[in-house]
Image (cartoon, rainbow, N blue to C red; front, side):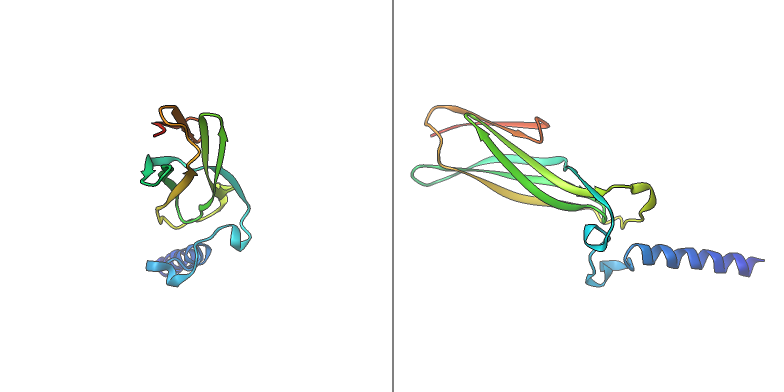
Length: 146
């Protein structure tokens, strides 16, 4: 009976490893499960961990936003960054893909982040204040044109 139970546990572990793309230390260079292997996904906002405005020393000055977003476990992927400007407000949205049905997917516990610098350009008036809204106001930054 004990032998049968041991064989069952070993079989389940092998099945879990296969479902996780052969999860091992480093995963042998293979990507974790995701949209590229047919798993159904949905696109959601990626939580912002850090963000700050950078001023490039040029004439006229150029501005950028450096951000760090949480992507999550091995089934999640960075999708894209969308940027829209309306007058003095710049909206930046960081998106990731996640499993559409997480209850039926086994994922590696590989914690992932995405760091990116988003260039805003140089079309900013000196002395005027600008607002950067990250992920619909999850975080707000302000800066003044020079």
